[in-house]
Every structure is written in structure tokens, then in C-alpha cells.
Length: 473
Image (cartoon, rainbow, N blue to C red):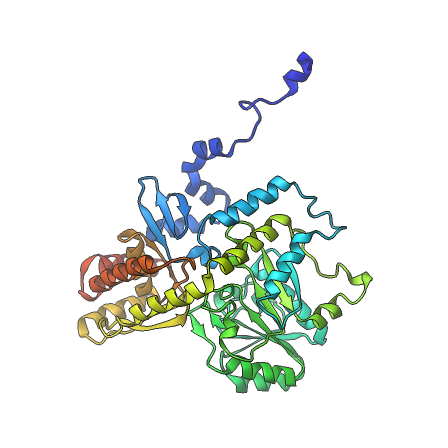
């Protein structure tokens, strides 16, 4: 090598990218960087409620801070971390696929990994035949909406009040929460019906322009399950009117509710299209999938001219496919679905046993490791006056009063289930066991004891929340 050539080669000190060095140098600026360059309201909100923690590492169902304190994760990244963080099998699969240096995303070949992952997914849904891979849950929903409209030749999709489904424009059109929709009109011509109301569904179907009903078997907002028999009856109504049933299993799928899919809890339910994502990623590479019947795919992709009529630039990439295959392998080998069912029943039953003890604990519901804890108006005069103060300021503050001390005093991360709801949603990694159940129930009991004492730190924080809620009006 000549002197000139040697001079042109970057050295570690003047050109190589080193992630560890960058994080060591700039990691402490995380909240300032986010406030300056990303969503400025997120760090503001985290500072306000005391959630502005600095987590140094994570493994399984736990985080650790710089002092070595562990935090129990009962949120799982909104359900993404179904196997917990950094599962060794998923990590190895990603190392292996990177080391293989595959000719990925050439666009004009057929790599083996997408077909292998589709085959494994379809084995859990034998009435379905084909898969489209995208990059997220909302993209899986967008695919289902497009396919349903195209194959039926109809414009309108029904959805349930309080549904989520995603935040891109098509998915937002079937989002049942006004707070997400406000200011983004006009949206697609879709119509909400109450979850479980077959009469309302039948009335809309009689108009003859409905392509499909999209439904979460258990709604994430509030953790409300479809009533017994609803999905099967809705399916029969839809098919009678030549419309489709779309099951949104983005959060409920892959074992979350104690079945591989939540719709499988009800015998005879066979959706025409099923959307999955979140846990399929292993927590590493974004991936979404829309599973459907053969005739639907063949009608969409009806000729070679239409081969790319629906596609995704990063869909079916090797890293996502490898992660998905590893996730399904772990689920089968470690019996994740059965474990989620058993642990979920243990957690739900132990929490439900507290209802008679605490007058502000109104309900505990859900299936598997998707559990909603709802709070309600107390009977005693002293607690009732405090409850009324919170409700007057902003509905949902009591649930936030429980979530904050769970993190601050007991190092347990949870979430309020939706805006203006007095519901906490538990969607922990599916790998938790009795130890984590004990830790959560003990902490929850301590927080509820404090809240029902009529004083203490919980109500001190409640006063702070009231002042902030009034100031933000």
C-alpha cells in the first residue's frame, strides 16, 4: 500500500462508527435529544408523571438501572416483547442470518425464509392458506382493508366502538377512539358498531355496501372481550351478506390470551383475514403479517400484471423472517401458549380475590396474560369525596395514581389502558411465572392499601395530578 493509499484509509479515531462509544458519549442526553428532535411532548409527559427513568439494560421480563435496581416489566413494549427482551434463541437467529450474508430483497427472486415462516404461521391457522408480510400491525390492517374492499367490490368496512387497529390513514378509519381521529379527516367511509351488537351489524349489512367487519377478539382499550357467541354469529351474518370477517390479532395473537389466536377461544370461528405483528418480531425487527384464504389472494393477485399490486419495500426481509421463525420455534419448544394460559389464570384469580377487600377495585377481567383492572366509585364518604375530586379534574386520574407508585415505589412498569379510563392493562411478557405474579400482587396490594387509607403518598400524588389536569384545560 502506498503512503497516499494508507492516508486515505479511515482509522478508528477519525472515521469508524462505534455504537458503544457514541452511547457512552451521548447517552445521558437521551431526554434532551428527544425533546429537541422528536415528539417533544413525550419527555414532557414522562417528566410530569415521574416515568423519566434511565434503564441501562434489559433481559427477559426485567430492566435494570445504573444502580443495579431491577424493574418488572408488565407492559412488554405494548405487547411486542412476547418472549421478553433478548431471548437467546432469537438473538442467535439474527446473528446467524447476518453472518449468512444472504442476497436479500433482490425483488426478482424467491428467498426461502418468507415461505418457511408463512408455512409455520399457517400451521397454527389451518383454515387459512396464504400470507402477506409487511412491517407493522397497522400495515397488516391496511393490507386486510385493501384486500377486503377489492375482492368484495364494496367500499365500507365496519369496526367496533373503542377499537384501535392502528394510526395510518386506513387503519385510523376503523379506529374507534375519537381522540386519535380528531383533526385527520376526511377518512375512509367506514362505520362503527358496538362490540357484541348483532342487530347493529345486521342493519349495516342490509345496505349492501359492506366489505368486512374488522374486530379485536379482546379490545386493547379497556380489555373488553367480545361476548360469547358474538364472533361466530357475526361471521355467519357477514358471509350471508357476502362480506368478510377480519380478526385483528396484532396484540391478542401469538399466545397472549392463552390460545395461539384469541378468536380460537370460540369454536367455529374462522376469519377470512387475520392480522398479526408485535410478538412475531421477537422484539427486534418490525414485522407484520396478513393471513388469508386462498381465493382472496388469488383474486387480488389475479395476473402477472398485478404481481406487485400490493407490496412492501422491507416486507419479507431476511432479518424479520429469521426473528419470526425463531419466535415460533421458542413458542412451540417452551410451551409458551400453555404457560401464558396458566400464569394468566393465576394472576387474574389472585387479583379478582381482592375485589371484596378494596371498594375502589371494581373488576378484574381478561384472558391469559391480557388482564384489565378496573377501578370504580367507592362507597365510604371520605373516599367518595376524594374520588369525586379526581373525576371532576379528569377521568382516569385514579388509575394513573396506581400506575405511578407501582413504578416509583415497587419498580413495576404498567400502563393505563386508555385515555379517560380507570383501567390498568397488564400485558407482560408471556414468559413470566409465579415469582412475577407474587411480586405484582404484593405491590398492587400495598398501593391499594395506601389508597384506601385515605391519605399517604398515593393521594399526595393525586393532588399533583389534579393541579396538572386543571392547568392543561
